[in-house]
Length: 102
Image (cartoon, rainbow, N blue to C red; front, top):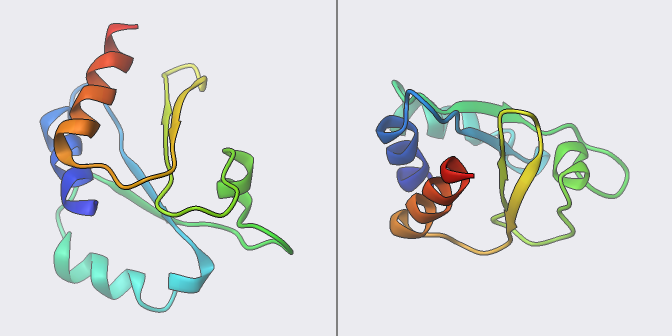
């Protein structure tokens, strides 16, 4: 999905901030992958904090065990949507457009 999120981040650069959070299990490979494939991406890349049962941010945002997990948050920090399945560009665009209309 990262190519789609990167495109959303570029297409909506004036109104949307995309944050991608990877889990502890991907910590060793994520930085190299990001540097190689998304060196100039407007996406903010972050690493989740591990806890005993779930990654901290993933758990706080409602994640249970499914990946990928997409959360749409408005400018006030209100969660507008949570999607626990893979999304294509048109799906993401539709979700972002709906969120911007609200």
